[in-house]
Image (cartoon, rainbow, N blue to C red):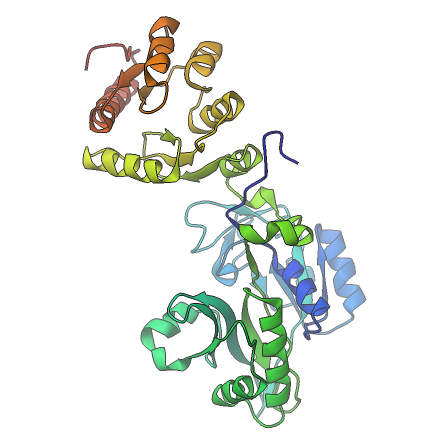
Length: 400
Protein backbone atom coordinates (compact mmCIF):
# COMPACT_ATOMS: atom_id res chain seq x y z
CA UNK A 1 0.00 0.00 0.00
CA UNK A 2 0.99 3.64 -0.43
CA UNK A 3 2.56 5.66 2.30
CA UNK A 4 0.57 8.64 1.12
CA UNK A 5 -2.78 7.61 -0.31
CA UNK A 6 -4.34 5.45 -2.94
CA UNK A 7 -2.03 4.18 -5.66
CA UNK A 8 -2.81 5.59 -9.11
CA UNK A 9 -1.93 3.83 -12.33
CA UNK A 10 -3.51 5.67 -15.22
CA UNK A 11 -3.57 2.63 -17.46
CA UNK A 12 -2.69 -0.97 -16.63
CA UNK A 13 -1.24 -3.26 -19.29
CA UNK A 14 -0.32 -6.85 -18.40
CA UNK A 15 1.94 -9.39 -20.08
CA UNK A 16 0.65 -11.70 -22.78
CA UNK A 17 0.91 -14.89 -20.72
CA UNK A 18 -1.16 -13.27 -17.95
CA UNK A 19 -3.73 -12.14 -20.51
CA UNK A 20 -3.89 -15.71 -21.79
CA UNK A 21 -4.58 -16.97 -18.27
CA UNK A 22 -7.51 -14.56 -17.96
CA UNK A 23 -8.90 -15.76 -21.29
CA UNK A 24 -8.62 -19.39 -20.21
CA UNK A 25 -10.48 -18.64 -16.96
CA UNK A 26 -13.25 -17.13 -19.08
CA UNK A 27 -13.59 -20.43 -21.00
CA UNK A 28 -11.83 -19.18 -24.14
CA UNK A 29 -9.61 -21.59 -26.05
CA UNK A 30 -5.90 -20.69 -25.92
CA UNK A 31 -2.74 -22.39 -27.14
CA UNK A 32 -0.90 -24.84 -24.90
CA UNK A 33 2.08 -23.13 -23.36
CA UNK A 34 3.90 -21.91 -20.27
CA UNK A 35 6.15 -19.08 -19.11
CA UNK A 36 9.81 -19.25 -18.09
CA UNK A 37 12.30 -16.74 -16.74
CA UNK A 38 15.65 -18.37 -17.59
CA UNK A 39 17.23 -20.37 -20.37
CA UNK A 40 17.16 -23.67 -18.43
CA UNK A 41 13.51 -23.10 -17.51
CA UNK A 42 12.72 -22.50 -21.18
CA UNK A 43 14.37 -25.81 -22.09
CA UNK A 44 12.25 -27.56 -19.46
CA UNK A 45 9.03 -25.93 -20.66
CA UNK A 46 9.73 -26.86 -24.27
CA UNK A 47 10.48 -30.44 -23.24
CA UNK A 48 7.31 -30.72 -21.14
CA UNK A 49 5.15 -29.41 -23.97
CA UNK A 50 6.54 -32.22 -26.09
CA UNK A 51 5.63 -30.63 -29.43
CA UNK A 52 7.59 -30.47 -32.63
CA UNK A 53 6.54 -26.93 -33.53
CA UNK A 54 6.63 -24.21 -30.89
CA UNK A 55 6.88 -20.44 -30.61
CA UNK A 56 8.97 -18.46 -28.12
CA UNK A 57 7.73 -14.95 -27.33
CA UNK A 58 9.55 -12.23 -25.40
CA UNK A 59 7.32 -10.91 -22.62
CA UNK A 60 7.73 -7.14 -22.79
CA UNK A 61 5.01 -4.51 -22.65
CA UNK A 62 5.48 -3.23 -26.19
CA UNK A 63 4.01 -3.89 -29.60
CA UNK A 64 5.75 -5.21 -32.72
CA UNK A 65 7.94 -7.57 -30.69
CA UNK A 66 8.45 -9.79 -33.72
CA UNK A 67 10.24 -6.99 -35.55
CA UNK A 68 12.35 -5.92 -32.57
CA UNK A 69 16.05 -6.48 -31.84
CA UNK A 70 17.72 -7.66 -28.63
CA UNK A 71 20.98 -6.27 -27.29
CA UNK A 72 22.19 -9.87 -27.58
CA UNK A 73 22.08 -9.27 -31.37
CA UNK A 74 19.10 -11.62 -31.71
CA UNK A 75 16.64 -10.38 -34.33
CA UNK A 76 12.97 -10.71 -33.44
CA UNK A 77 11.22 -11.07 -30.10
CA UNK A 78 8.93 -13.80 -31.48
CA UNK A 79 10.56 -16.82 -33.10
CA UNK A 80 8.82 -19.85 -34.54
CA UNK A 81 11.88 -22.06 -34.89
CA UNK A 82 12.92 -24.33 -32.00
CA UNK A 83 12.67 -22.23 -28.78
CA UNK A 84 15.77 -23.92 -27.39
CA UNK A 85 17.82 -22.07 -29.99
CA UNK A 86 16.82 -18.69 -28.55
CA UNK A 87 16.14 -19.41 -24.87
CA UNK A 88 19.51 -18.04 -23.74
CA UNK A 89 19.30 -14.91 -25.90
CA UNK A 90 15.96 -13.52 -24.64
CA UNK A 91 15.58 -13.68 -20.82
CA UNK A 92 17.55 -10.93 -19.11
CA UNK A 93 18.28 -9.13 -22.39
CA UNK A 94 16.82 -5.84 -23.64
CA UNK A 95 14.48 -5.55 -26.62
CA UNK A 96 13.96 -2.49 -28.82
CA UNK A 97 10.86 -2.31 -31.03
CA UNK A 98 9.21 0.36 -33.16
CA UNK A 99 6.92 1.20 -30.24
CA UNK A 100 9.69 1.52 -27.63
CA UNK A 101 11.66 3.95 -29.81
CA UNK A 102 15.22 4.40 -28.60
CA UNK A 103 14.28 3.02 -25.18
CA UNK A 104 14.94 -0.61 -24.30
CA UNK A 105 12.59 -3.00 -22.52
CA UNK A 106 14.11 -5.73 -20.37
CA UNK A 107 12.76 -9.19 -21.15
CA UNK A 108 12.36 -10.89 -17.77
CA UNK A 109 10.41 -13.86 -19.09
CA UNK A 110 9.45 -15.71 -22.26
CA UNK A 111 6.21 -17.43 -23.21
CA UNK A 112 6.62 -20.75 -25.03
CA UNK A 113 3.56 -22.20 -26.73
CA UNK A 114 2.48 -24.41 -29.57
CA UNK A 115 2.77 -23.15 -33.11
CA UNK A 116 -0.50 -23.82 -34.94
CA UNK A 117 -1.02 -23.49 -38.66
CA UNK A 118 -2.78 -25.16 -41.57
CA UNK A 119 -1.21 -27.24 -44.33
CA UNK A 120 -2.89 -26.44 -47.62
CA UNK A 121 -1.62 -27.61 -51.03
CA UNK A 122 1.80 -28.53 -49.63
CA UNK A 123 2.19 -25.13 -47.99
CA UNK A 124 1.75 -24.02 -44.42
CA UNK A 125 -0.90 -21.32 -44.20
CA UNK A 126 -2.31 -19.43 -41.22
CA UNK A 127 -5.22 -17.03 -41.31
CA UNK A 128 -5.48 -14.45 -38.58
CA UNK A 129 -8.46 -12.41 -37.47
CA UNK A 130 -8.45 -9.33 -35.30
CA UNK A 131 -11.04 -8.72 -32.60
CA UNK A 132 -11.31 -5.98 -29.97
CA UNK A 133 -13.90 -4.57 -27.60
CA UNK A 134 -13.45 -0.83 -27.25
CA UNK A 135 -15.15 2.17 -25.71
CA UNK A 136 -16.75 4.19 -28.51
CA UNK A 137 -17.63 7.87 -28.05
CA UNK A 138 -19.78 7.97 -31.19
CA UNK A 139 -22.18 5.26 -30.03
CA UNK A 140 -21.64 6.21 -26.37
CA UNK A 141 -20.95 2.64 -25.39
CA UNK A 142 -18.97 -0.43 -26.32
CA UNK A 143 -18.23 -1.55 -29.85
CA UNK A 144 -16.84 -4.80 -31.26
CA UNK A 145 -14.15 -4.09 -33.84
CA UNK A 146 -13.09 -6.93 -36.12
CA UNK A 147 -11.09 -7.60 -39.25
CA UNK A 148 -10.33 -10.68 -41.32
CA UNK A 149 -6.91 -9.23 -42.15
CA UNK A 150 -5.23 -10.04 -38.86
CA UNK A 151 -3.97 -7.81 -36.07
CA UNK A 152 -0.22 -7.36 -36.49
CA UNK A 153 -0.61 -4.20 -38.63
CA UNK A 154 -4.24 -3.39 -37.88
CA UNK A 155 -3.52 0.35 -37.92
CA UNK A 156 -2.24 0.05 -41.50
CA UNK A 157 -5.31 -1.96 -42.47
CA UNK A 158 -7.59 0.73 -41.05
CA UNK A 159 -5.72 3.45 -42.97
CA UNK A 160 -5.28 1.66 -46.30
CA UNK A 161 -8.34 -0.60 -46.44
CA UNK A 162 -10.99 0.80 -44.04
CA UNK A 163 -13.75 -1.40 -45.48
CA UNK A 164 -11.88 -4.40 -44.04
CA UNK A 165 -12.68 -3.12 -40.53
CA UNK A 166 -16.11 -4.21 -39.28
CA UNK A 167 -17.88 -2.76 -36.24
CA UNK A 168 -20.81 -3.82 -34.09
CA UNK A 169 -22.02 -1.33 -31.43
CA UNK A 170 -23.25 -3.01 -28.24
CA UNK A 171 -26.10 -1.72 -26.09
CA UNK A 172 -24.58 -2.02 -22.61
CA UNK A 173 -28.07 -2.36 -21.11
CA UNK A 174 -28.86 -5.40 -23.25
CA UNK A 175 -25.44 -6.95 -23.75
CA UNK A 176 -24.15 -8.79 -26.81
CA UNK A 177 -26.95 -10.12 -29.01
CA UNK A 178 -26.15 -13.68 -30.16
CA UNK A 179 -27.72 -13.21 -33.59
CA UNK A 180 -25.93 -9.93 -34.27
CA UNK A 181 -22.57 -11.38 -33.18
CA UNK A 182 -23.11 -14.46 -35.34
CA UNK A 183 -23.85 -12.21 -38.31
CA UNK A 184 -20.60 -10.36 -37.58
CA UNK A 185 -18.70 -13.67 -37.55
CA UNK A 186 -20.18 -14.58 -40.93
CA UNK A 187 -19.22 -11.19 -42.37
CA UNK A 188 -15.68 -11.81 -41.13
CA UNK A 189 -15.57 -14.83 -43.44
CA UNK A 190 -15.80 -17.71 -40.96
CA UNK A 191 -17.10 -20.91 -42.56
CA UNK A 192 -20.03 -22.92 -41.20
CA UNK A 193 -17.52 -25.17 -39.38
CA UNK A 194 -16.13 -22.21 -37.42
CA UNK A 195 -18.88 -19.64 -37.16
CA UNK A 196 -20.47 -21.07 -33.99
CA UNK A 197 -17.18 -21.17 -32.12
CA UNK A 198 -16.28 -17.71 -33.39
CA UNK A 199 -19.60 -16.38 -32.09
CA UNK A 200 -19.09 -18.09 -28.74
CA UNK A 201 -15.55 -16.72 -28.40
CA UNK A 202 -16.53 -13.15 -29.30
CA UNK A 203 -19.34 -13.17 -26.74
CA UNK A 204 -16.96 -14.55 -24.11
CA UNK A 205 -14.46 -11.83 -24.94
CA UNK A 206 -17.20 -9.22 -24.65
CA UNK A 207 -18.03 -10.58 -21.23
CA UNK A 208 -14.39 -10.16 -20.25
CA UNK A 209 -15.12 -6.49 -21.02
CA UNK A 210 -13.10 -3.53 -22.22
CA UNK A 211 -10.14 -5.61 -23.38
CA UNK A 212 -8.18 -5.76 -26.61
CA UNK A 213 -7.34 -9.11 -28.09
CA UNK A 214 -5.43 -9.47 -31.42
CA UNK A 215 -5.34 -12.01 -33.46
CA UNK A 216 -6.93 -15.46 -33.87
CA UNK A 217 -5.67 -18.26 -36.05
CA UNK A 218 -8.36 -19.95 -38.08
CA UNK A 219 -7.72 -23.53 -39.15
CA UNK A 220 -10.00 -24.42 -42.04
CA UNK A 221 -9.88 -28.27 -41.79
CA UNK A 222 -10.66 -28.17 -38.04
CA UNK A 223 -13.31 -26.00 -36.32
CA UNK A 224 -10.75 -24.66 -33.87
CA UNK A 225 -10.20 -21.00 -33.10
CA UNK A 226 -7.45 -20.64 -30.51
CA UNK A 227 -6.32 -17.18 -29.48
CA UNK A 228 -2.80 -16.76 -30.81
CA UNK A 229 -2.02 -13.55 -28.95
CA UNK A 230 -3.67 -11.35 -26.36
CA UNK A 231 -3.29 -7.82 -25.08
CA UNK A 232 -5.58 -6.80 -22.25
CA UNK A 233 -5.62 -3.33 -20.75
CA UNK A 234 -7.46 -2.04 -17.71
CA UNK A 235 -8.59 1.42 -16.69
CA UNK A 236 -7.56 2.71 -13.27
CA UNK A 237 -11.19 3.15 -12.29
CA UNK A 238 -11.57 -0.64 -12.21
CA UNK A 239 -8.87 -1.15 -9.58
CA UNK A 240 -11.19 -1.08 -6.57
CA UNK A 241 -13.13 -4.06 -7.92
CA UNK A 242 -10.33 -5.86 -9.78
CA UNK A 243 -7.52 -5.85 -7.24
CA UNK A 244 -6.32 -9.28 -8.32
CA UNK A 245 -5.76 -8.09 -11.87
CA UNK A 246 -4.10 -4.84 -10.82
CA UNK A 247 -1.69 -6.81 -8.64
CA UNK A 248 -0.24 -8.16 -11.91
CA UNK A 249 1.27 -4.75 -12.74
CA UNK A 250 4.93 -5.14 -13.76
CA UNK A 251 6.66 -1.98 -12.53
CA UNK A 252 9.97 -3.02 -14.13
CA UNK A 253 8.48 -2.29 -17.56
CA UNK A 254 7.43 1.24 -16.67
CA UNK A 255 9.34 4.51 -16.53
CA UNK A 256 10.95 4.47 -13.02
CA UNK A 257 9.88 8.09 -12.55
CA UNK A 258 6.26 7.13 -13.19
CA UNK A 259 6.61 4.22 -10.76
CA UNK A 260 7.89 6.63 -8.10
CA UNK A 261 5.00 8.98 -8.84
CA UNK A 262 2.46 6.18 -8.44
CA UNK A 263 3.80 5.38 -4.98
CA UNK A 264 3.04 8.89 -3.77
CA UNK A 265 -0.22 9.44 -5.70
CA UNK A 266 1.37 11.86 -8.14
CA UNK A 267 0.49 12.12 -11.84
CA UNK A 268 3.71 12.15 -13.87
CA UNK A 269 4.43 11.92 -17.59
CA UNK A 270 7.97 12.35 -18.89
CA UNK A 271 8.58 14.57 -21.93
CA UNK A 272 11.64 15.50 -23.98
CA UNK A 273 12.23 19.12 -22.94
CA UNK A 274 14.47 20.80 -20.35
CA UNK A 275 12.02 22.72 -18.09
CA UNK A 276 10.41 20.62 -15.38
CA UNK A 277 6.87 21.49 -14.34
CA UNK A 278 5.51 20.83 -10.86
CA UNK A 279 1.94 22.09 -10.69
CA UNK A 280 -1.10 21.67 -8.43
CA UNK A 281 -3.88 20.62 -10.80
CA UNK A 282 -3.98 18.90 -14.19
CA UNK A 283 -5.59 21.84 -15.99
CA UNK A 284 -3.00 24.25 -14.64
CA UNK A 285 -0.25 21.81 -15.61
CA UNK A 286 -1.49 21.77 -19.23
CA UNK A 287 -1.69 25.58 -19.27
CA UNK A 288 1.81 25.86 -17.83
CA UNK A 289 3.23 23.62 -20.56
CA UNK A 290 1.44 25.69 -23.22
CA UNK A 291 2.88 28.94 -21.80
CA UNK A 292 6.38 27.47 -21.74
CA UNK A 293 5.98 26.46 -25.39
CA UNK A 294 4.69 29.97 -26.18
CA UNK A 295 7.96 31.37 -24.86
CA UNK A 296 9.89 28.87 -27.01
CA UNK A 297 10.81 26.56 -24.18
CA UNK A 298 10.26 22.81 -23.98
CA UNK A 299 8.54 21.11 -21.01
CA UNK A 300 10.49 18.20 -19.52
CA UNK A 301 7.46 16.63 -17.90
CA UNK A 302 3.88 16.86 -16.76
CA UNK A 303 3.71 16.50 -12.98
CA UNK A 304 0.45 17.20 -11.15
CA UNK A 305 0.70 17.01 -7.35
CA UNK A 306 -2.98 17.81 -6.88
CA UNK A 307 -4.61 20.54 -4.84
CA UNK A 308 -4.05 18.94 -1.43
CA UNK A 309 -0.43 17.88 -1.77
CA UNK A 310 1.47 17.22 1.46
CA UNK A 311 5.06 18.27 2.14
CA UNK A 312 6.11 14.65 1.60
CA UNK A 313 4.43 14.52 -1.79
CA UNK A 314 6.04 17.78 -2.92
CA UNK A 315 9.40 16.49 -1.70
CA UNK A 316 9.02 13.29 -3.67
CA UNK A 317 7.85 15.27 -6.70
CA UNK A 318 11.11 17.23 -6.66
CA UNK A 319 13.03 13.98 -6.40
CA UNK A 320 11.40 12.86 -9.62
CA UNK A 321 11.86 16.01 -11.71
CA UNK A 322 15.31 17.22 -10.64
CA UNK A 323 18.71 15.55 -10.56
CA UNK A 324 19.41 16.75 -7.01
CA UNK A 325 15.92 17.27 -5.60
CA UNK A 326 13.30 18.13 -3.00
CA UNK A 327 10.30 20.37 -2.40
CA UNK A 328 10.03 24.20 -2.35
CA UNK A 329 11.48 25.68 0.89
CA UNK A 330 11.94 22.45 2.88
CA UNK A 331 13.25 20.51 -0.11
CA UNK A 332 15.49 23.29 -1.41
CA UNK A 333 17.10 23.85 1.98
CA UNK A 334 17.45 20.17 2.83
CA UNK A 335 19.13 19.18 -0.40
CA UNK A 336 20.74 22.48 -1.43
CA UNK A 337 18.94 22.47 -4.75
CA UNK A 338 21.30 23.31 -7.64
CA UNK A 339 18.67 23.52 -10.37
CA UNK A 340 17.19 26.97 -11.15
CA UNK A 341 13.80 27.16 -9.44
CA UNK A 342 11.07 29.58 -10.55
CA UNK A 343 7.89 29.62 -8.47
CA UNK A 344 4.61 31.22 -9.45
CA UNK A 345 2.21 31.42 -6.51
CA UNK A 346 -1.49 32.23 -6.71
CA UNK A 347 -4.44 31.51 -4.47
CA UNK A 348 -5.23 31.12 -0.78
CA UNK A 349 -2.47 32.34 1.59
CA UNK A 350 -0.36 33.41 -1.37
CA UNK A 351 1.17 36.33 0.55
CA UNK A 352 2.14 34.07 3.47
CA UNK A 353 3.81 31.67 1.04
CA UNK A 354 5.78 34.49 -0.59
CA UNK A 355 6.91 35.66 2.83
CA UNK A 356 8.13 32.18 3.75
CA UNK A 357 10.15 31.96 0.54
CA UNK A 358 11.60 35.46 1.01
CA UNK A 359 12.63 34.74 4.59
CA UNK A 360 14.09 31.34 3.76
CA UNK A 361 17.18 32.84 2.14
CA UNK A 362 16.94 30.18 -0.57
CA UNK A 363 17.70 30.74 -4.23
CA UNK A 364 14.09 30.72 -5.43
CA UNK A 365 12.80 33.17 -8.04
CA UNK A 366 9.15 34.10 -7.61
CA UNK A 367 6.68 35.61 -10.03
CA UNK A 368 3.00 36.59 -9.94
CA UNK A 369 2.39 36.20 -13.66
CA UNK A 370 2.52 32.78 -15.38
CA UNK A 371 3.88 34.30 -18.58
CA UNK A 372 6.65 36.05 -16.70
CA UNK A 373 7.48 32.85 -14.82
CA UNK A 374 7.66 30.91 -18.09
CA UNK A 375 9.86 33.58 -19.69
CA UNK A 376 12.26 33.51 -16.73
CA UNK A 377 12.36 29.72 -16.82
CA UNK A 378 13.28 29.70 -20.51
CA UNK A 379 16.01 32.34 -20.02
CA UNK A 380 17.47 30.53 -17.02
CA UNK A 381 17.51 27.23 -18.89
CA UNK A 382 19.47 28.81 -21.74
CA UNK A 383 21.94 30.35 -19.28
CA UNK A 384 22.51 27.05 -17.48
CA UNK A 385 22.92 25.11 -20.72
CA UNK A 386 25.46 27.61 -22.05
CA UNK A 387 27.37 27.49 -18.76
CA UNK A 388 27.44 23.71 -18.77
CA UNK A 389 28.74 23.65 -22.34
CA UNK A 390 31.46 26.10 -21.32
CA UNK A 391 32.12 24.04 -18.17
CA UNK A 392 31.72 27.01 -15.83
CA UNK A 393 29.57 27.58 -12.80
CA UNK A 394 26.61 29.96 -13.07
CA UNK A 395 24.40 31.52 -10.41
CA UNK A 396 20.72 31.59 -11.16
CA UNK A 397 20.32 34.51 -8.73
CA UNK A 398 21.40 36.92 -11.48
CA UNK A 399 18.72 39.48 -12.44
CA UNK A 400 16.79 38.34 -15.49
